[in-house]
Structures are given as C-alpha cells and as structure tokens.
Amino acid sequence: MTLALINSRLQDILVNMGVNLTALTDQANFIRDLGLDSLDVTDLLVQVENSFSIRIPDEDWWKLQTVGQLKNYLSHEVTFD
Image (tube, rainbow, N blue to C red):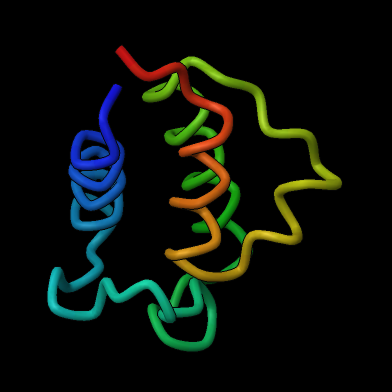
C-alpha cells in the first residue's frame, strides 16, 4: 500500500464522517479542529482498523491526536506493496 493510498483511504473515512476535505491537514486535531466527539473518535478507530486490516492498541490510539500522526502511524503499520 502506498502513502497516497493511505492518505486517500483516510480522507474517504473522514469525509464520510462529515469532515470537510479542506480541513484535513496534517496538523488538524480530531477533536479540537475537526469537531469529532469521543463517539466519533471511536467510530474512526473502528473504520481505520477495518479499512487497513490492522489493530491499533488503545495505548497507541490515544497518542494519535492529529491527521498527520495517524498517517505516520499507518505508514509504519501497513504493509506496502
């Protein structure tokens, strides 16, 4: 999986959750900047795990507060073709 595909899948998930595409910068905080609440963040976790076929441990998930942090995490956890 390429970085472009990771970015595209993550964008699709967040846009489908109602986040504006223009708000998706690497610095965007899921709660503060994108307006997600705790239920939304849990939903995001489930969708990311399903979409990328990975398991993100709770202790890792709460360290991922921005779009960029999540993309960086996925780039290390997802196998590239």
